[in-house]
Length: 280
Image 1: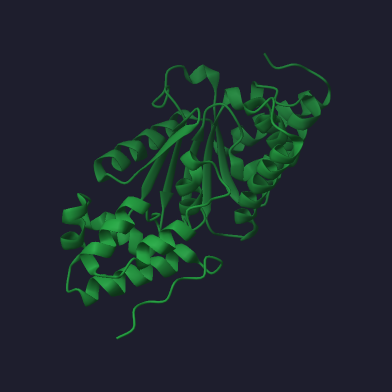
Image 2: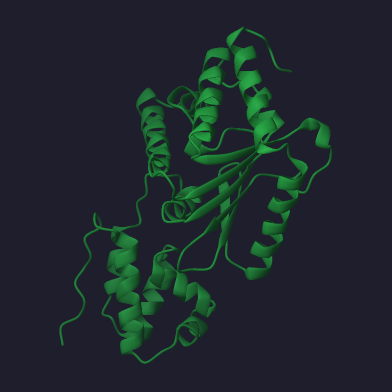
């Protein structure tokens, strides 16, 4: 019987690779748990690879080819798909985000990427990379704006964001840029495309003092959480960890202003920026 064909990286590559993994595993008569054991991963992790929720990394691909006798198929395709337009620490999270049915995010210092405007994104990337060529910054901005098209769908994914008040007060790119991005957030909320809350300074200590947090839910796979720091990030699927992060987000929601009051604050700050007032 002929082996599987190499995949076309332009056509839902992770979903196709996941489907081939499932077929190869079933052909070998192994359960997800049985395939995961020699890889030192859980059966649910194998399930996430098969559903396309998680990216298949090269070291796993090489071992899977040996375990399933697939003649280098997964290694070849994994190498072909290895390049991403996103930074290495964020690539897997961005790919998971694109197929999520629900996203809940606490933003500690900046407007989340899905809701950024061009000028805001450019200011952020220029701050990250002050000596980068303009062409590199433009490519980063274009990729960020492409992520934002995820919200072109009127209903999916459900995006619920808690913005720390610091996000509103930190003047990124100047008053005009801040006015534009906060108005954009307001418009998304008024169109009922997102739910946004603001965690005010007056809330004091809260459940996520140490950093930002993103939770993602899927129709056919377990939820994931993503934590990020400077040039690093980690996508987590451990059920206990995801449960703890879910509680953290719930506590942030409870401490934040209501969506109505949050929107009023966002619009007020946007107006102040438009009038040239500083927010320190």
